[in-house]
Amino acid sequence: MKNNFILLFEHLGRYFLLLKQLAQFPQNYTFHLKELVKQLDELGTKTLPIILMVSVFAGAVTSAQLSSQIKNIPLAPYTLVGSASRTTIFLSLAATFNGIVLAGVIGSKITSELGNMRLSEQIDALEIMGINPKLYLIQPKVIAALVCIPFLTVISFFICYLGARYGAIFSGNVSAEQFDEGFMYNIKLEYARIGIIKGIVFSFLITTVSAYFGYYVKGGAVEIGQAATRSVIACCTLILLFDYILTVILL
Image: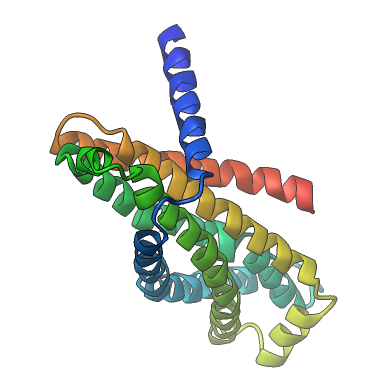
């Protein structure tokens, strides 16, 4: 148990040192900008389809479950399905649920990519050339995620709404008018702001934690796979933890 605590603090210390080094300005803005554009495409454009698919089905399942449960509550108005779906979409589905999905998609990819570069000595070659590999390889990923993932969260708001709306309608329990009335009743844009803030925090956690596990990997191909698994577990755990913390603080 004692060794586990020592190992935990060792990882935390090395992680925060990595964050400190990422806060520096890049040495070569041309290379940095090219890598940033590449990462914007990787983390934004190429992840959009899975966000759309996950959002529409998550919204549909949520409203379908709510509409089936509302029948068991005497005198409960069916407009509650719309209002409950709205709160769930803004506070959980668009940010947290998609964050966990992206932790598996983006996080494992970043860990594997950096791990392969570490074991093939490409990172060592960058250091010999006088290029800071943390700034060149990791910082553009963090910046791209901070730009793309909150934007994807906003898109997810609308896709989740459409999925929830038609999921409730197709369930046969709620009409379109009832759902829309409940969704728009006493709507609070503060919830959308909280969802966007969560998206920003989660994007930072996903990229930095997964990059940490990949950058410091040791061993061979098996260890890269293990590092990718650990990074996804760590990202998902931190997302759920910060989801609770941010909800308590911001609500």
